[in-house]
Image (cartoon, rainbow, N blue to C red; front, side, top):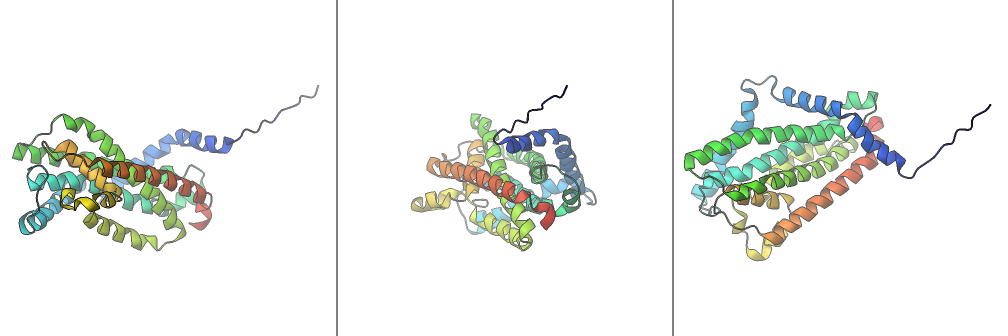
Length: 276
């Protein structure tokens, strides 16, 4: 007796299958993240200590230039060094994640051209690896707070929300640059410029309160302004109140950046193996 097989085609089935594949290939995500973390410090003399040295050196430079020479005010009377470090930690995470994720597909070209897996795993693993550096760097913040006897209050409970906002901003921007870097290799030269320029237009070495009130909303178009201000609000006891209109702008733009970055990455993903 012949049996009749029925084929059912459901709308958006391929899209759902893609997200199911992300879960199926979670072990690959773990492997890539661990490999990136190990390779980053494998042949260095001091290893993961670089995650601590970089923010400390930048903190010293910015404290001298903006605090001593330019004599800019600190947030809420906190020591200038702690204020700078509270802004340096999220910026270092964002810049490292952006740089690593933008080059991640190129660095894994052999893997991408040979086997199938959701390509989104590659830049996502780079972002998570950078988040490990952020967690390590918090030990420096703890030491600085103990030295100055400046401990956070109840607002530190909101810090994970601003870490998530920094993670979202890094992911969205990283997806855009990752996909563009595959298609246009010029972006390997553009990304370092973006990172360097972004550090100086973001309130890393100074408080965003020095920006004139009439320009603060426009200044908040930079998503990292809300992230850095949020970090300082959560960490610095007695710090200034959050500029809520600017924070809402940062959150909205970060959400748009993530959505558009994911859309563009998925649009270009089918050509990665051919172009790369």
